[in-house]
Length: 401
Ligand code: PMT
Image (cartoon, rainbow, N blue to C red; front, top):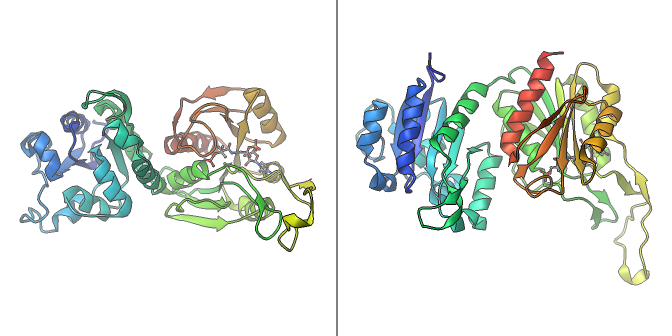
């Protein structure tokens, strides 16, 4: 039995030098038992002939969107009905089109029509990869639930070194297997996720806030919804697009976040508190805009906000309760103390001094703490991948209840 027996996979191949590696990816998928159909952009066919993909997949390769369909259905609709789409290599051009919904070739039309999970393996020159436009497109695709594999760093075809090299066929294959085997394992379960900062009013225009972007919490909510969970996402103000299939409750202050969580918590199987709620609020916020001319200095008196996680810890019955801790020193000691005090079943400790970890970045580097003092060190990874890893751990805890 192959790992992917009975799975129908669409391999989208777009035009970059890494096309030759897509041949090996196809071979791995077929060897694992997947029924693989291939769609290529015209640019991709300049690098490797469709014939190679046809021979290895045992299916005709879709290139021309206007050619006579080989099935009774329109070609892109037929191709879109699959268990997973993987695009390797995914050029900057294709990623940009996918980010805004352009459908102008056999790969992009199929992606726009599909309901299946999508894995993309970017491949491009490092300047193109690092360009803020590409980074914005990737962030948008991640928010929409795309799985992004790589790119790796190393020697590039343009004879420079940097980030942009397509991940190895083995790594992309592993990501495909991971996504396919995880599908719908949260079906029937209810999850409460919190995300983003909270803001505390100073006056009608000013507030106290923090650097949380909401990316971590949104990634968890998106992954859980994809895996079949019934998700309530309680979110402070963020610039992110809400993940599809999630019940979004928008809040502004810590008190509002607390009220929303306390209402939903009794019904859920698990709660993951990735938000960064303000610990203090202004004791007497002004009804009118504070005039700077009126005073030489402005003194704000702050009073403590409710600790939502601690309150949920008190309320907890059957729920698996997961906290985050953002620490800049004594990571394990401080996080363990938080875990005990707030009665968490799992605590995700971020060392926010590490590059690529914590606030407002697309990656995170965490340690997972369990009540028996066990510590799991997790490598630096994309927040969407970390989200899936966390959901794996939480699912085990739910099943062990
Ligand atoms: O949003 P991103 O930009 O993606 O960044 C992610 C993150 C760094 C915000 C996230 O990964 C994270 O670490 N969130 C917790 C930040 C935080 O508030 O840490 P804390 O150590 O102050 O709080 C510990 C736990 O108690 C957290 O689960 C927090 O949600 C919760 N808490 C805190 C204060 C409060 N008044 N009520 C709470 O429930």
